Amino acid sequence: MKKRLFILLILVSTSAFSQKIDDVFKTMPNSILPGLSEGNRTMLLVDTGKTVIPYTFGEIEKLTYSPDFLKIKTSEIGTTQIKLLPLINDTQIICVIKTVCRNACDSNIKFYSTDWKELNANTLLPHISAESFLDESKKGTDNYKFAVSLSDIYPISAEFENGTNTLTLKLDLKNYLSSEQLAKIKPFVKSETIILNWNNTSFK
Image (cartoon, rainbow, N blue to C red; front, top):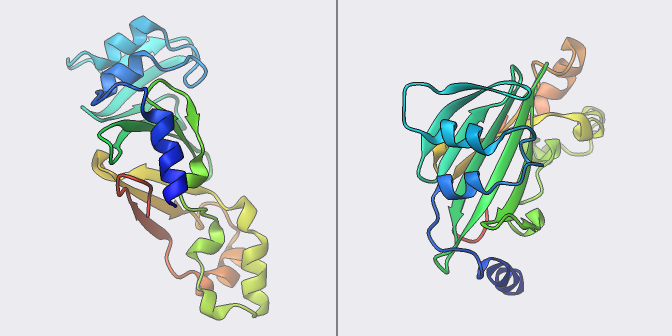
């Protein structure tokens, strides 16, 4: 753990100290939100009543905004969250969560230094799969094995709770599985929600 932290601190040590969400949003690579021009970004950050602006792929809407957090709606089914997380050496890293909600919501989580170099997510976030939500005490039964067999296709959404450093992960069963599948799996679900807290090193 100490070795991982040391490597992480080296990676971010050259980045600016105490940046605000405006700073990193303006310098964000186009690959993260394609088609969002510098002008679009400036308009989104301006503190006015107008939070919806047109851009290349339709409209983009500012949903939540604070000095260290930005959540925007990028389409009818998509949102992006950008969160500045503090480290123990008074620097920061960026967490970007892209969520797509079709029949159910599924999120992709990535981490970056404040100059937008991608970081190894395995050192910052525990591995989460559908099995993380299941009751391990019931292992060995046929239905538990069936539940685990579907774990790679379960959608899991991630949300910063009210823009804080608390990350809520949700396993969406009702909107994804058939009634028959849900009936077999439901008894083995310990919780449909996992709460992770940022401790200035990683999520625990």
